[in-house]
Image 1 (cartoon, helix red, strand yellow):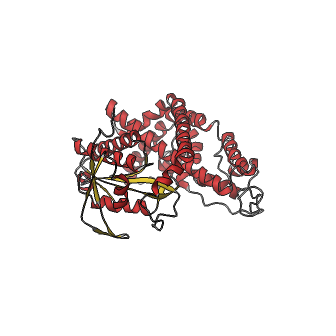
Image 2 (cartoon, rainbow, N blue to C red):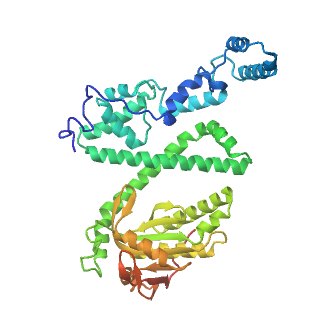
Image 3 (tube, rainbow, N blue to C red):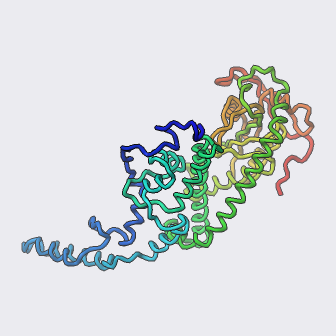
Amino acid sequence: MTAENAHPDTGLLAPEPSDVPDAVVDAAALEAAVLDTAGDDDAAPGGATGGTIDPETLTDDAADAGSDPADADTEAAATSARAQAVAAHPATGTMSPERLAIKALEQRLLGGERKLRRREVAAGAGLSLLSARKLWRALGFPNLGDEDVAFTEADLTALNTVVDLVRTGKLTEEAAISVTRAIGQMTDRMVVWQIEALVEDMVHQQGVSDAVARKQLVGQLPALVDALEEVLVYSWRRQLNAGVQRLAVRAEAGLASSEEGREGDEDDAPLPLARAVGFADLVSYTSLSRRMNEKTLAQLVQRFENKCAEIISVGGGRLVKTVGDEVLYIAETPAAGAEISLALSQAFNDDEILPQARVAMVWGRILSRLGDIYGPTVNLAARLTALADPGTVLVDSMTAAALEHDERFVLLPREAENVRGFGEILPVELQRGQGRGLVLD
């Protein structure tokens, strides 16, 4: 959908309707509300709403309690407790050092102080509130109420940037929302990953508790923000360039090579990309995780992901995702996929901490969407992984046919298996032939 043919009522560029119902506010997600009350320090005990406790109110409350001698001890204890609360939360209206640090970091990250409400930002971009919320939801932002002062000028600039791509016809509405959603989901996962990595490092290096590490991290982040942002942009540009190379240089060659040994009526024939799709699955992970404490399990998972990411990267592949004890990866040729698969299997066989892995790889066609991959090729690779013995690599017969003339690989046919969704297939065990394989330096 372009700017010219966007539906006037429902499109991204739709004008503000005369009566737009308020969104249901998700109180748990209202970070703005939390920070707005931070100026009065943390909420006082006993449900006080102003963040401070009035000593005079406490005195009046105590007087109203009555003069029953039986209640004397109770009144004294209550008065003492409230007096301690007053001392802990003086009625000064000032923020604690921790809140000041959070506030300063927020203004730096958000590009200024929160001064705008959601309707003001939408109007500034020439959008209806419904249209603006489409983009905010794509980015993963929480629902906010009309009175929440939650946005900055940087939010308005970002909204205008995306909307201008649609207005100028560079992106359709659907593409703009999809690209925006990709940014939101990837950066959300990245931030969680980075914070957890920093916290874990502080716990390990400084010997502090997890809670203390998280509190101290707020003070350390300002020194890291610019460097992390610089590396993020650098990596994005490099990854985009790699994607362009795959798109423009090797796509047709990959499809041409995928025709060998095919009749044209395979289940994956209509799909656009030819890729080697592989899975690596740790053996006995569930039983191991039950016997491990939190720290040991975290170290095992991190070791598994690091090793997979390194091998897949060196082999020229791409790590699509990790799900617990399993990693999904792709490569652009059958040989590259085979090299990665053998290297993964060998690495886990040799590792003194990680268990062995079942590995399987299938060469075929896939659909790539939302950062994930889909199609019968992916499903068959997953089924073969379950059939593989620990420490071995399985491929299907068509993938074996694509590799049979390559001296780097040895192919050992196994007995036919009945696989759910595919009927009878002929698994082939892949082993190392001539050559060194992947070299990890």
